[in-house]
Length: 81
Image (tube, rainbow, N blue to C red; front, side):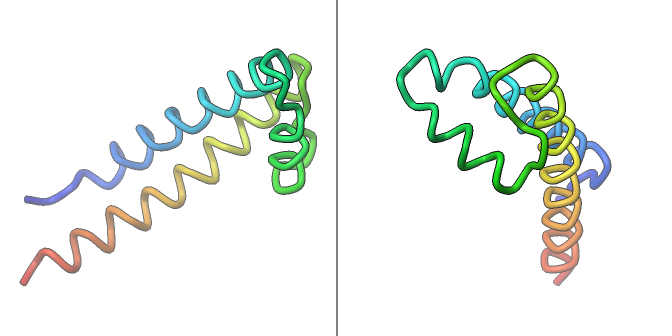
């Protein structure tokens, strides 16, 4: 079985983007603002406001999308045998 590389990358990107966006608002509400600070170290511009959450979502979409594309490509290469 082969993975659809484009679909896998898009699905992973969307999944991560939604998670990062939601985390921007829920982590401080749950008393864990350090999670936002930790994520912001890798995703420049990420913060607990709407603009920062959108910036983080874009970063997460690109980051996870690329990672999932590489994963799917490698999976397809290794599963050919």
